[in-house]
Image (tube, rainbow, N blue to C red; front, top):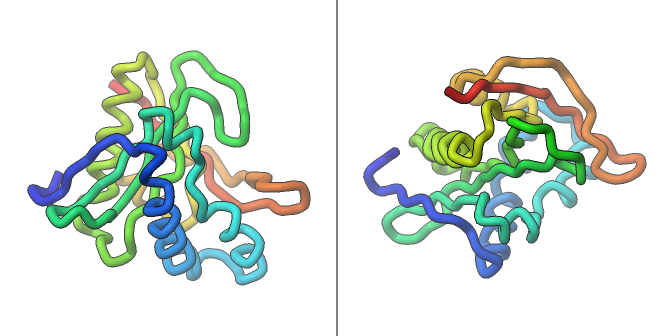
Length: 169
């Protein structure tokens, strides 16, 4: 982890800051990999923090020495979208890095914390629904690609993603 980066669990008081980060990150970073027709419907839905995830103690913020939010991300035992629990599996959730902070170790620090915390909770693997944009990052973090999936955000609104899996240990 970069020396000037601090990780901490998020709280409900951080939701507005997380929303700003997601709204700054996703449109810029996803634009090369998704058509405008997908982004116009998906961005308003995915660029919002999940209060239950933020309040879970399993969602982390990466801040610089001045307290600026450079990244966020977490994990859950339940699959995204209200899915069930699969014993031994933790799900990577809502990871984002500020576009101005890319390639500075922010995403790696968050994923190291996510993997360590999920492992301490008994998970043997991480399941991830990656954006097309983040596939190379997750591969570099030890994830294997399982294949393309469509994530239903709302009836009639789907978001193309890539399911990835990483063993812990």
